[in-house]
Image (tube, rainbow, N blue to C red):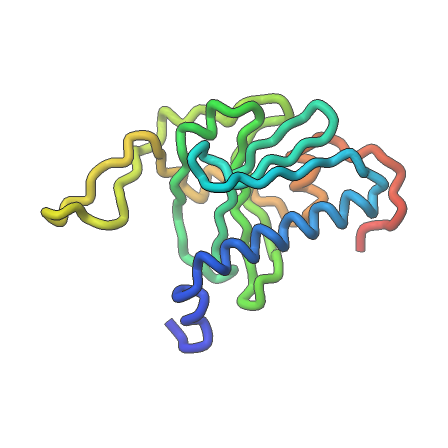
Length: 177
């Protein structure tokens, strides 16, 4: 790892928080530009329910689990809690970011607004990243490994917002760049 990117590893928790805040800020800004103001954002204090954030618009409530990866990152899979599948309209948004934490691309795993998360039963059970006292990495029975290839690639924030809430049919105040 280059010295210039060491801080992404050393301060990964801080980076994750910043990326989530950037996403929320950009999403709310874009919805504002589209003349959409009936959006709520609720943050989970901790990830016990399998999600990081709840966003709602009208009757659509989305429980969102965020993941992030650097644009040249090699992550081929990620872990998702089975608890997310119990939530209405649960989804995973894997944010691809540049070294300066600009949102570059979005990976989507979820259903249509109002639909539950696609079935997780066919995916492998996740193992703990650290071994127990005997050095054995035990299973995390309530988590599944989702390969990157199972995520849809979305190249714009508007595409993500439409996945979250359906057609954004308000009259735009400001056109997308």
